[in-house]
Length: 115
Image (tube, helix red, strand yellow):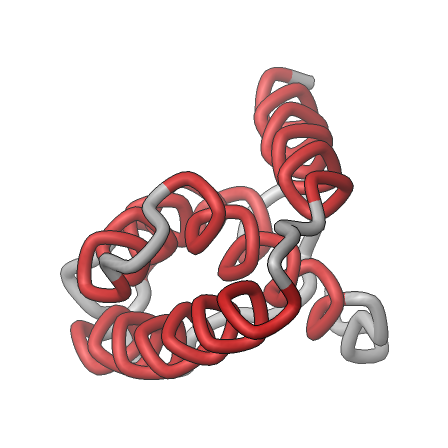
């Protein structure tokens, strides 16, 4: 089933990338690797039971995603983590609420996969 693109998906992505940047400060490559790993868990749920999208040509990654999807996640998450590091370093405080939202999103998606 096809439905509208979930408008909150960019917010969810920002929460994942931001949360990973908070867990791995000053290591954007590690934050990007973690965000990409989370996407590998989320992809089968988003493309499967939630039905947000489907891949026209099945790829080898979870949920039928192509490898380029993970490459893109890594690249964009790397840039986002570097930006979060820069803003956090200049502001002197890390927004801990991003981490809490990240954990909540991950748990909610994991629970929906079990239904």
